[in-house]
Length: 258
View 1: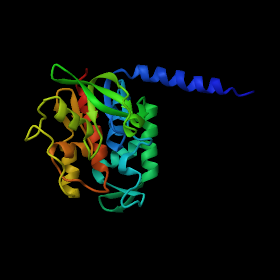
View 2: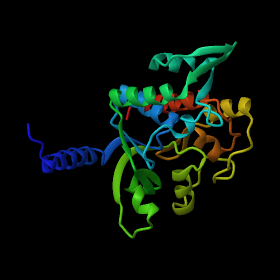
View 3: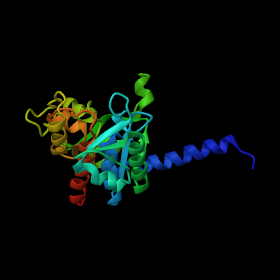
View 4: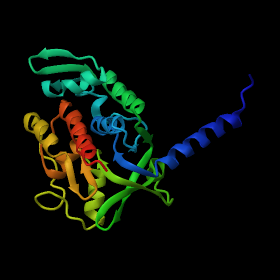
């Protein structure tokens, strides 16, 4: 068979365009493809929800790839092992209550299982704004990450979602947009972003799950973003809370039966 470059180009453009059009009106839109965002998307997709995830970078996985100080071993506590087992990720016990996993296997497996469950991931797309209707977050304003990086004056597109989840980690990118531009009071002590505190793994791992919830109408936070918004310590290179927070938000959204 003789290959035709035009057919190759058409295949990419036509297929991607159809996929993107289907992502314009969904049940849940997640921003940030770290472990919390992908786990959240996995459980939602598994439950039959129309869920999409937008990641501004080329690769998914957030900070999980590098483990701690670029040693690609990651630690999980006992309470999160059930999620690793569900994904089929191999673990090794280090000491009682502490489990190790290979970060490369963990990220790639979570991504693969989430996509196979029905999650649609769009990389290189950034959420530069939100859509607010009647004081409720009801969608995202998207642009190519390269447009932002090059500081080009190119207008974005808008997509609609019944719920939006911010899983952008430490920057809490979507929550900051809402705070700055919408006038909506967030469900925090101050009504604004509280900011993350210095590292304390024990407290941070507990608070990240507690803080993963709805913080204004139509808008949830999970992963490290939850502690950045509601106020809690960072936890460093232990990742169980990330998985548990993604699972928690997904199950709360599923229970809403929207």
